Image (cartoon, rainbow, N blue to C red; front, top):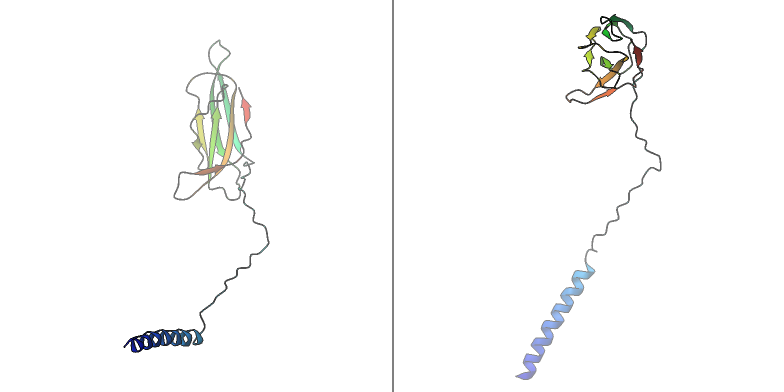
Amino acid sequence: MRIVKCLRHRGRVLIAGLLMASLMAGAPAANAVFTRTLNAGTTSVGTYKLASPTGNVVTVTCTPNGGSSKFRLTITVTSHGTVAKANNYVLIVKDFTGLAASPVPLNPGGSYTAPSPGNKWTYSVDAQYKVPGTSYAWSSTPNPVTVC
């Protein structure tokens, strides 16, 4: 009886070994190699710079304020130059401390009157590119003009 059990056990091992060998001798396992070739070129990123508009037609009026050395300022822009890629133009006015008033939209012209007398203002006509669908805008480098 022991011999029969031993033969059965060895038979099972033999069958398992033969089965394994036949599976390994069948189709080979799938092997794959993936390669990627990168271009050795360079990538550059930068920002677009808008030029300042030229050919602006601006009238500046400095009215003396009584006997003081201060003036009442009015700036009127009749027209402005055009700049490639710009889709908006504004008048920027700053007082002697460098504090800027709210930009005045130019469509194509506009005007600004200082709320109180003063002296030594600067103004610039700036080109802008307003990014559609956002509140972002790129502005040209201002060329300030000193008045009064």
